[in-house]
Length: 510
Image 1: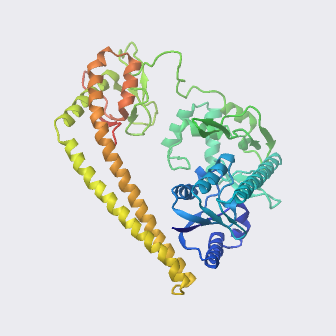
Image 2 (image 1 turned 30 degrees about the vertical axis):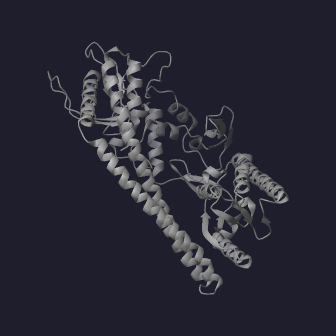
Image 3 (image 1 turned 180 degrees about the vertical axis):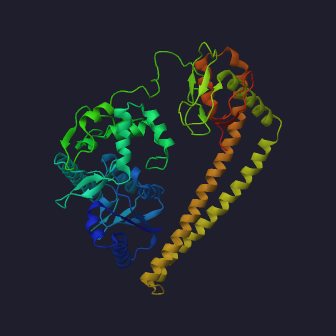
């Protein structure tokens, strides 16, 4: 085995980056010189450009830890131990445990940490604690600075709100906002539609779509996007801070983040002029009846296709329109005005889905699909074995690279070039192994799921008439991911059967 080099950028490297210095390559050069002076063979060089608060937010570090836990390395070279972990105590414990139990050394320019030495372990633990404390202090100062800038009326976001562009404030140290030449007239139109003309959000979106006005994403405006735009106080010359703070909670052993609306937050006068009057702002933000009715949890589901059927034209979920005097049938509709999809009777769609299930069962009961899967599994197992053998060969080549550097056959520049080229080949090989293994696992899972899926479909069909609507919905969701409905032609007068098609995606790996 050999040693790896791990280099990661941090916030304190920003000043050097601004001067045009490549911090990562500078650290790698330093660590290569350290490896040469200690005669440590280098097997891999890992670069991390993400400065995340947790290990889960840093994919390269997650890979390094997995390899350390698998005892793939004798040790690792880093500039400082805080480059490994500056997260919470769980992340610190994860790093310490991985290196301790695998007996993997940590080599820095200042000290070598030996896991078998209890004093080194104590010092390593203390170093991680101090790096976390320093990180928390820096983060707290940055948050206080943003809050202070907001209270002084400056804009602290990275992306300007719709209708505005970010500009440098007169003091040259902060950012302010100025009207955007293209978006500002659209912003005025939005407030005119929703405030003066009292259009609902959906009606306003349809109006702008018909005019060819699109959102920043290049897609038509949606009611939720429109509501977010007109409720932003920057349009009336205000700065809002702390309105949606990140709240962390532990669920099932994992940290879950949410951003609920806060009842208490900072609202300060901005350094830019208001574009919209407060009266128009409040009129535009009056409650409107353009959103869908809220989900009722006090009564059972009335739609067997709830959460299952999507429109083929716009991709949105279709909703139930209950029967009325003129239309004594429940319909499934796409309630967005600009969409061209036509509604369909729920009982007609139900019959089509049951027919699809019957055909699906017949297809796999009277075919050699399972035998074909067995042949495919054997072939894919052979591919995985060949790729793993190739990976072992590449690892042996990697071990010999440093020998050439030691013997003077390779200069440092050639060593890095050859090392990078070999690492790319190893990375590609690992990627191919991962893809082949995933394909193999999917084939195995597909065969197993088909054997289970078909009997479950049979049971559902045999019990269908005895199930309630909520039970039907639950059963369908256990078998089907989603259904795509295509229907753009209205029924002619007296026509009984609609012209439509469905694409059903069962919960079976493809």
